[in-house]
Figure: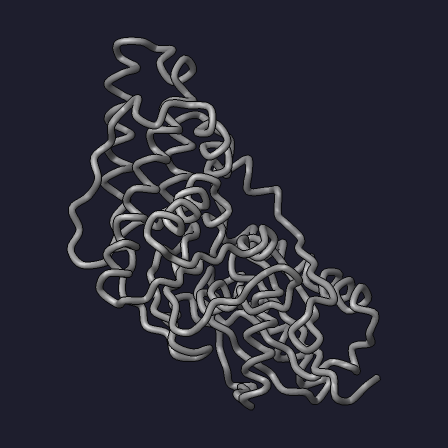
Length: 340
C-alpha cells in the first residue's frame, strides 16, 4: 500500500445509526450505515435499545467498511470517532471500540465533535460539489441541534445562534406524532407539505432575541390548534393533512430564513452551508436556493447521504486533524454534551 496515502476510518454512533467509513486523502472509499428499525414502534429513539443495537452492529459495519474500501485494517493511518454530543450509551460503544482498535493497530486516535462534522461534511472530495470558502455561515439543523455557526477555519468555529429549547428536527417529529404519522414524522411532513397550501393555517412565529431559535412554542401551538379543530370535526387531521403539513413547514422555514438573513446582515458573510438531518428537507433547500438568487448569497447543500448521521463526515474531520497532528490518548471519554 502506498505509504503516502492517508486512510482514515471514521466511526459514528451518536444516536441510533451505527456507521463506519473509510476515506483516502479526503475521498470516500466506503460509507456504511446500519439503521435501527426497532425505535419505530416506540415513536422515538429508546437510548437503552440504541446502545444494545450498536454493540451488535459495530463489528460487522466496520468490517464491511474496510472490505468495501479494498484495504486491510493494517493500512489504516488513524481512527476517528464521534466523542459527542449524543446519547451517552451509544457514544460509549463507538468510543470504546475506536480506542481498542487504535491501540491494537498502534495508530493514532482522533476524537470528533459531531456538530463540527456536519459542517465539515462539505469538504469531502466529491465531483461536481463546490466547497465553501472561509469564512462561511453553517446552519446545522437536526433532531438534536439547531445552530448558526460562523466558520472561519476548519477548527475555528463560533456558535452565534442556537435553539433555546427544542431542536427543529424534534419539533418536526413531535408534530408528526400529533398528526398520527409514523416515526420519524419529519420526512413525511415534508412529503405532504409539497401538495398542501402553506398559507392555509397561520402559526405564530416566536419573538426570540438575537440569532437564537425557539421551537417549543410552535409545537404547543400545533397541539392546541389540533385539539380545537378536532372538537369541531373529529376528521379534521385526515381531511386537512397536506395543508397542515404545508403550513407548519412554511412557518419553520420562515423562522430559519429570518434568522439567517439577520446573521448575514450582522456578519457580512454571504456564503451559507447547511448540514444535519433536517437539511434534507425540500422546503429548506428550496428557500436557500431562492435566497441565493434574491439576496446574492452563495449556498452549499451537501449530498443527501452526508446530511443524516454518517461516518464519512467523522472521517473528513479526522483527515484534517491527522494533517494537523491533533491526536487523542486512551484517557479520552465520551461526552453527551459537547459544545463546539
